[in-house]
Amino acid sequence: MCCLVWMCATAVTAQDKAKPQDSTPKYRNPNLAIEDRVADLLSRMTLEEKVQQITGGWESQAEVIDPTGTYTTESARAVLSRWWDPDTPFPPRKAAILRNGVQRFLKEKTRLGIPALFMGEALHGFMEYGSTSFPQALGLASTWDPELVHQVFTAAGDEAGASGAGQVFSPVLDIARDPRWGRTEETYGEDPFLASRIGVAAITGLQGDSFFINRHHVMATAKHFAVHGQPEGGTNTAPGNYSERIIRENFLVPFQAAVEEARVGSVMASYNEIDGIPSHVNPWLLGRVLRQEWGFRGYVTSDGEGLQMLVQTHHVAANKLDAAKLAIAAGVDYDLSDGSVYRTLLAQVKQGSVPESEVDRAVARVLATKFRLGLFDNPYVDPDYAEKTTNSAEHRQLALKAAQETMVLLKNDKNLLPLDLTKLKTIAVIGPNADQLHLGGYSRGPSHSVPILQGIRDRVGDKAKVVYAEGCRFTAGKQDWHGWFEDNVQLVDPKTQVDKIKEAVETAKNADVAILVVGENEATNREAWSESHLGDRDSLDLLGAQNDLVKAVVETGTPTVVLLINGRPLSINYIAEHVPRFLRAGISARKVAPQPLTFCSAT
Image 1 (cartoon, rainbow, N blue to C red):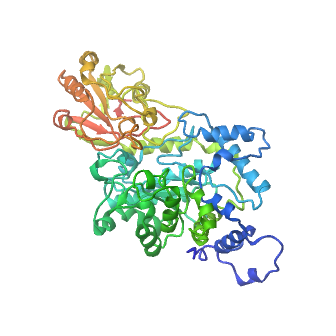
Image 2: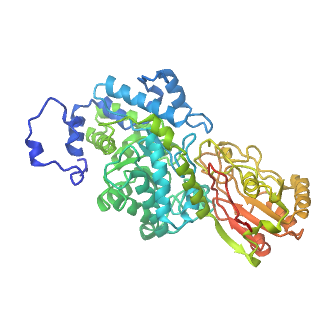
C-alpha cells in the first residue's frame, strides 16, 4: 500500500466533488488531491511506463519540440550527454529552452503526457554554467546564520527552477566527524544541532514555504542517509558502525528535522553500510525510521551508481537483478545513474519474482513529487526570466555578503588587521592558492571570476603596490577548482620547490606586509569516488612545501598574515604558534571580486 497522505495540503470540498464530471482524466484535474491524481494515473500506466518513471538515464533518448529553433533532438541529446563537463557553455536561457522542448514533446507526443523531472546539484549554488556560486557548505555553516543561508538557497532555488530543473541533490546533512574524509567541505560540520538548523534553512529556501513548490523553487534532497560523515579510517563510503543510540542522537538529527520541520521532498540513500547492511537495502533505515517514525511522504533516490555498488562493493547482491529486488523492497524508489538496475524490474515483475505492488509504490511516490512540483499543470519556464535572475546583481551582492560572513578571524595579535593602507607602500601576496580561483566541489564554470590576488589588487588600487610570488606548488596539473574533476592527481615533491620559496622570501623582504594564501585545493579536498579519483587523506598537515614556505616568510621579519583556504580542519601548529594573525576563508568564492582581507582607509 502506498503511504501517500496529501489530503491536508490538497483538500477537495464536497461541493467540488458534486460537480458533473467531464471526460478529462482525473490525473489532469488540478482540483483533485494528489493521491487521487496519482491513483488514477497509475491505473492507466503499462508496466513499461511505470519502470520508465523510476529509472534514470533517459536523457540519452530525450526528444524535443522546440518552436524557437534553438535545439533539435540530436543537438539536445548532445548537450545533455555533456552535462558533467565543467566548462560546457550552457547558459540559463538555452537551458530553459532545452528543458521546455523536452517537456513539450512529452506533453504533446506521448500517450499520457507525463512530464520529466529534471535534476541537478546545488551544494553552494545551482551547479550549472553561469549560475551564482556561493561559499561552500562548510563555510555557510560557519556564518551561524540560518536566515542568511535561507536567502542563499532561495536564490539558488530560483536560478535552478527558472532553468527548468525540478529537483536538486542538496543539502548534505552528514555529520562530519572525521576530517580526513574528503567530503567534509560539503557538510555543515560536526554538530547535529547546527547542521539541523542550517539544513532546515537550506531546504525551506530551496522549496519555499508552502507545500506546493512553484517554478521559482525546486525540491530539495536530504543526503546522504545515513551515518556517512564518520567513515572508518576517514575513507569515503567506508562503514559507519555505531550504536543505535549514537546514530539517533547524532547522525539522524538533521535528517529528522529535514523531514518533520522542512517537509523535504526527497531523501538520498548513502553509499556506506551500518552493521553490514548497506543503506540502499536497509529496511530499518528507509522504512521504520524514515517513513514510520518520521512520517516521510516523499521519495527515496539511490545515490549515483549506488545500486551497482550492492554488487561490486558490498557484495550483498549477485547481479543487477538481485540489487533491484533488494533495493525496491527496502524502499529505494528511484534508480539514479543509468537506470540499468531498475530496468531489470520489467522482466522480474513479469516473471513473478518481484511484486508489481512494489513497483507501483515507488512509481506513486515519484509521480506524487511531480504533482507537488506542479509539472503536470505547467511544466514550462520562462527563458527570459531564467536569463534575468541567474547571477543577477542581487544574487551577486548576496554572494558577497555570504562570503564576508563566512570569513573567520582565528588570531589577530597586536591588531594588525584590518590593514591600514595609509601605512603601506608594498603588499606581498604569496602562496599556491593566491592566484587561482577556488570554488570547492560541485561547481560549474563561472561567467566571471576573480582570484584572491586580483581581488586584493582591485581593492588596493593605486594606494599601494601589490607584488606576487607563488612560493610553492603542492599538486601537479590544474591548481584551481577544475582540479576537483581531475583523476590521478599527483603531489609535488617539496624538494623541488626550494627556488620558488627563495623567490617568495625576497618578495616578502621588500614588502611592508606579506599575505600568505595556503591550505588545500579542490584536487586534494574532494569526494573520493574511485581509486583513480582520491580525496581522503591520512594526514591533516599542510601538503607539500607549504609549511616550509610559511616558516621562510615569517623568518624574514615582515609582518605576515595567513589566509587559509581549506574545506576541512588542518593541522597548522607552526602557524598557530608563530604567525600573529591568520584567517580561515574555507573553500569559498564568488562571481564577484573576493575581499579576503579588510583594509581601512583614512578617506
